Image (tube, rainbow, N blue to C red; front, side):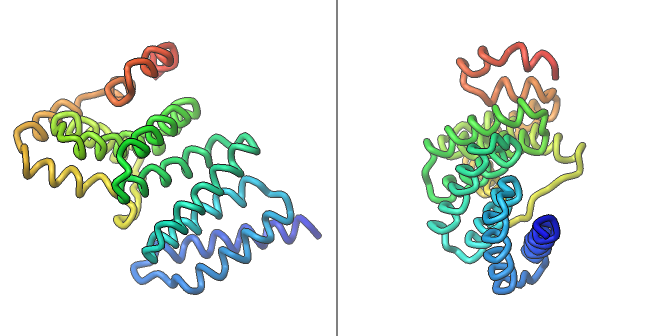
Length: 225
């Protein structure tokens, strides 16, 4: 039965994704399971599960150092999510795209991606996604030498994470190296930003993170936070 195949494929994808979180991840097994699962899910027309499984495939490729493959997987996840109207996976895939672009030194593209997915996360009231967006824009600010802004966004994101209790694996946390380099270059600015950022509400942090035109456009939505 299709329902049984669907459930089995999702279980395989979940098991493979969990393998990536282990201290010594079994990448070979996870890669095989994810490939099998995504093929089955695509055949069954389960777009949500296919898209989120492609994100896991991208994370695995990232762990293997295959950044071109990882970016292709995140692009595919975004394509499937957009086609099905899946805003949640669009946010998750977009955050991964932007973080990988930061690793690759594509700062302008990463900034645009962080803003785009931050806006999606705001629509969903998805606080983990908002934290990712703030962290990504923290890395952008640090890369451009704005220590105070980087410190503010990092502290605001950390406050969200501490409250919701959700943290990402260290391998995919890309803003901390940028922030540490900025802290070494201008410790006073970063410290001042961190003090201010720790006191921000979620709405205030979003308002600081977004470009002026986007902040003005979503002002009514921010008022609800």
